[in-house]
Image 1 (cartoon, protein in one colour):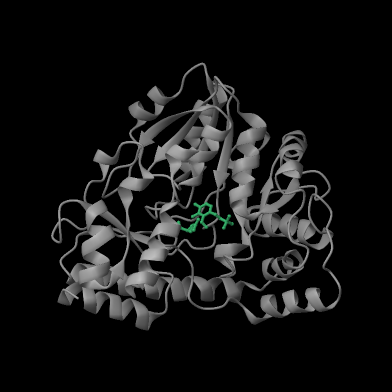
Image 2 (tube, rainbow, N blue to C red):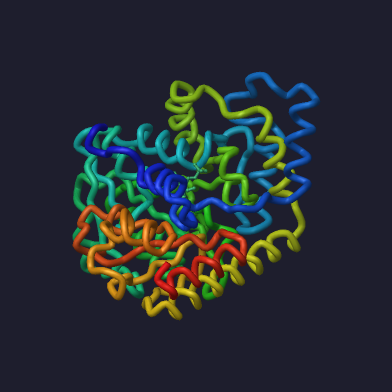
Length: 377
Ligand code: PMP
Ligand code: GLN
């Protein structure tokens, strides 16, 4: 794994700490999630839920995930066989890839991509075939997508809503991806951790709801983004029973089980009323709009994100090389940390001057960051 180095998120958060710059690099909220969820974790801890839970997850979380998928998407799942709780979406991704892919297999992936995907595919000994999404609209080029498939394609990894672009894949795009996967007998693994953070435009469509796709799709999500509890690391993967058993076979030797204390709390969160989910979106919309306006006022062209935690800006007015800018000029001269989008690419020339900024921060923090970017520090 030496080639993968230290994750960009650890590097950038360390840089924010040492320079005192505002950390718009790593995506984590700077406020706590809902009171009911925090209280439920305290209650679980105090009521003695401190030993190994069942390998698939605690019963009330399995049942809450099934209810959530029915409530929001009309997806029917059997909590006994179709759901596996994992240590964050990260473990769900790793265990799914390790369960289904091996040497000689190819995995189709859109770039830029969340950093754990490529490392996980390498751990499985499989090969990446990437399809570029280009600033500023991040549209799929159908010819490039078709060309990425081959007789070796074993899996397509789709992240919607997408990190780092904020793109929400349309039903038509998902249908094309699904059709190509079916033609090649490939699995689709979808990372939907930002499912409740679609701020405008078309709604989130889970791949598993498309005709014929449930039987070849593993759907992954996490409580981290939805309940502002990224440090709790409670995730899950749902799909056909046989595939979930295969993922469990890997998971048991990665981490054995997840945390007993936080699982019941995330179950409470998933059952919160609609007002919680709309309130979350309203807050994030306000924060997105604040940061987008700030970046534009600082003279940086942006790709306005429809979803998620992040906005991508073209930082060329501040310097041509975004990697250099993020490591030196931005933190030291402007007092703001962002992430160069090139680190999410196999081909860094696709994003030489693009920087990702997180807006999952309090309005006053975003306003101060905007002031610094406009004022030159
Ligand atoms: N997938 C994407 C697209 C992400 O942005 C993140 C970052 N949180 C994860 C997965 C990891 O989720 P978790 O913290 O639940 O492992
Ligand atoms: N998902 C968050 C991001 O993209 C944080 C991930 C991490 O720290 N591994 O910034």
